[in-house]
Image (cartoon, rainbow, N blue to C red; front, top):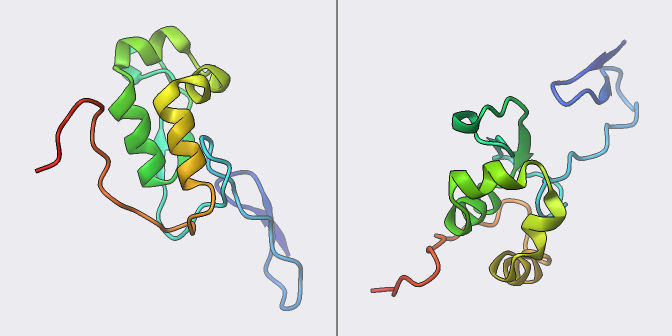
Length: 113
């Protein structure tokens, strides 16, 4: 029996049936792992209602580089977010990491202790 999961993908309950393709992260487009978070491309404080699934490290990277006001102005323009210098560098670095890879994300300009 087929049913839709929360991402709208069809899943089969029967053994041997093909699995649904992995859901990609909105920012880095790698498949999501065991842990994922929801992100509002337009912050709720700016009237946003839509949500997208992200890796926790990708979610932290967005909020480390942009304020809610900046995200509100950009809307859901993923190309503008990816074009940001620090985010582009992050995406190059994270591209070959496993889905559940995670390290602490520092805000730009902060010194590590």
